[in-house]
Length: 336
Ligand code: KG4
Ligand code: ZN
Image (cartoon, protein in one colour):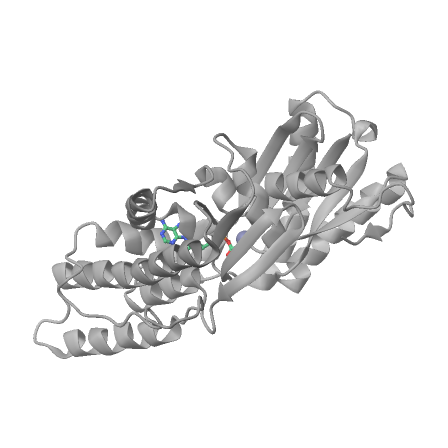
């Protein structure tokens, strides 16, 4: 069965074709980062309009790259949420329209389920069960994953997401958008021990996170440095970036390790854009090895938003009998 999938929840238009038997056949992505950069963040209206412009050319590209016609598609998957309303509507409308015209069913996918299952798109694939650390611009969650559709929320952020903490701190430091990679690059030249920054909830017994206090601490520290004669030096900015990155990574890693210990599981999967952070990767690799466990990072292209994870999550749902295709109402959403 061939499933065409659409992702359009934020600033990436992703389209992919996944076969329930053969796995990922093709995928294509357009990132809007360059377009939003001059505004310092995602502008929802511009995002929606750009999804409209990109989605059909990307669909043609995906079909052409595996020499397929639209009528060889058996079901259409799309990100139903969470995300920007207008942006989501584009993917949903295109998916529903194609499904209607082909008289094929649609499968609505939760964006975070896409991220959760994305590590299974590449080798080495983690086996179930595993703990997933989901760290993106909008979410920070620890989940226990026992199988497809079997997810237990272990902890989550009480305020800002980890990616948001990176992005907001980077913005305060005058770095570009998206801030995470920019802050991380600057941090490479800095010394994380120069400025002591808070590690909110590091020692709390639960598996929750809080990052909004860190942003305030970065702001306070910056103000002090700006007030000094000559303003902030490049080295001070790099030291502050390194301190910020270390504070975020310390908390994420400590809670992920705590989740492994609490659940008794040995496999940790890291998904979402912040999973691209080199410092986080290095830290977790060492910490999980000490527990004699394994840590899995999806390839970068599947870490950030993409269509492959949506089509793949739909294929997994179909394979596990969680998408009711047999009684399909042609063109109507089949809710998981
Ligand atoms: O998963 P994603 O592409 O989109 C959302 O669903 O939010 O994640 C984007 C987030 C942004 O906050 C970005 O700054 C962060 O991931 N990010 C990073 C790095 N690469 C992307 N944060 C820290 N270090 C990185 N190397
Ligand atoms: Zn995402």
